[in-house]
Length: 223
Image 1 (tube, rainbow, N blue to C red):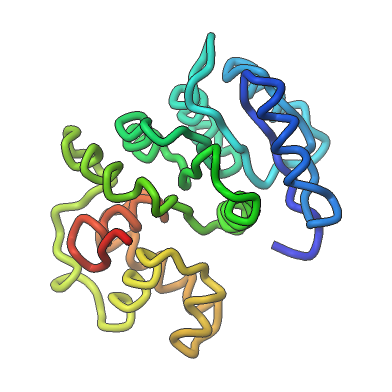
Image 2: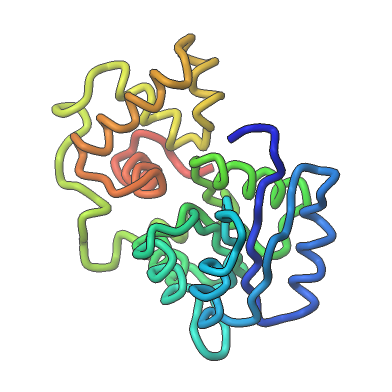
C-alpha cells in the first residue's frame, strides 16, 4: 500500500448503513468510496466496471437476493480485492462460513468508528481482522463445521522454524506485517516471506485461515 487513498466498495442493502459507512470512511482520513452495491448480485459487474481496482470490499452478510457469503465466494474466485464482512453480534455461524468462503475478516456493525477504520486499513493492506468481541464464539462455530483445507492437521511445532512460529503467533494476535516487523526486528519483506512459507507448510489458504489456525491450536487465545 502507498499513500494513495484506500479504494473501498460498500455492499449493503440498507441505504442508512451505507451512508453511515461513507461518513466514517472519509477522503480526509485516507479513504475513497469508489462504488456502492445494494445487494450481492451487483458486486461482479460493479468491480468489473471500476476504472481502477478496489483495495477492499466491505460486505454485509444478510441481503435480499444474494447474501454476503455467496458474493464473497464470487469476489475471491474472480481474484478480486479482499473482503471485510460486516455483521451483527449474533451471526457466529454465518461468520465462520464467511471465513471459509475467503473473507479476510469481520467487524461488527456497531463497532466504534476507529475500529472500522483500522479494520478496513488492515484488510486493504493484506492483513486480517477478527473482531475480538465475537472471535471466540465464531471459532467455536468454525470448528464445528466439516473440515476443509483452511485448517490443516499438520502441527506447527513439527513444520515451522522458531521464527516462523513467532510470526504465526503475531498473526494470530492481530498484528499487521509492519507491526510484526517492528516486534521481531526484521523487514516487512522478510515478514512476507515467512508468511508465505507458513501458508505452504501448514496448507493454509490465506491470512484469515492462519489466524483461525493460531487460535484453534492454542498458539494464541481469544481475548
